[in-house]
Image (tube, rainbow, N blue to C red; front, side, top):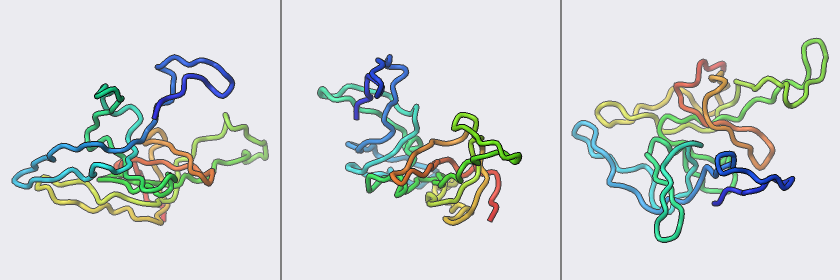
Length: 180
């Protein structure tokens, strides 16, 4: 995936302002890690399509192609289809469908897109298997799909689904409350 150099309106963008892709295919993985006496394999395999954090990784040129070296912790989840709503989160990640922003104020004034308050409530679509404890065992998350949650306003990575819905992937620690 190559970032575009022009906007739809034809404005040239410097590299620093270009939108970089947040996904790609895994071409190789490391040997894993050891926690305590437990040896753990990497949770993604070569060939998997993954989504990663926006500013993660180190870009390298290898055999004429651009690649990104990532830590496993920078990978948000595995995407087996082209639609972000099917994301399978990894580790302590939670994938949420964001609630719709209010269209008007309590007094009845219509809000423009720019003035709408960014929602921080949504419905959990999927959760990762949980973080690893000090012995290398998975600690399941208490958050489950279907929960309505309140989350930190500036946390996570935002995505737009093919259905036009907004989604966010964040760490379970960024969920402040389970509302239902």
